[in-house]
Figure 1: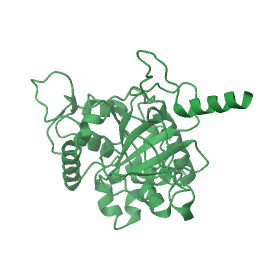
Figure 2 (figure 1 turned 180 degrees about the vertical axis):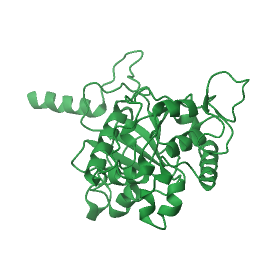
Figure 3 (figure 1 turned 180 degrees about the horizontal axis):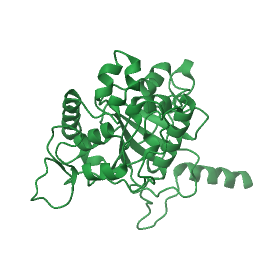
Length: 319
């Protein structure tokens, strides 16, 4: 399968490659250049790239009324909104997809926004099977967490799940985007890692100040930069519509408009898009390749014919 890719705008040194399915493409990037003349491919070292699988959370209770009336997002009733039963069906279907495609076997880590709907989506899609008291280790989710009506979920055979504040939804004003205390989350999701979150209470959300779109996008670019510092090579990210839309709008600006749309259009609930990120500016400190092979083992003469031709021309010229 052929994958389409593009370089981002000049505001960052990262590029995205978009893959329209979960099947991994060839180990090179395709750079969008000369839009009038079509795509011109260019090679990029595989070990300087990471594969990321971006997921918007499944349907939350706030989405139902908010879809009809935007003012519903202002309701305290939707504080840290949990998934609907339809949302859990969406989770089950995405879970089937990541298992049937073999994607679950490739993912080294899952990053989730620390809100109830995203954590529920992350553990439901990428977690283990139903948890029983006879199992070793802590469950990813206790039974009926967040009024889910769902059984406990095991962490067995699941990639680690890490909560990160940087990929939260648009901060401020909307109660649905305010998180509860980390100590409460830790009781609901015992095997999820919350160690990177410094404050137990939500000090980022303000009742009377909402982030601008530019601030969300800046935070998103910082998140992508942070992702690239991780040692993991294949990462799933479970986050939010607004965060994804404003962040991805910063990328693909010199691609064909159709490719740009593939990258940055709004995500549906529980939609997954697979992409590749790379850093063209990083020379020192990049990870070494696990698949490159130096060759010449055992050593022997290996002068290329072209180089031999050049040497003969130089020799003839000197005579």
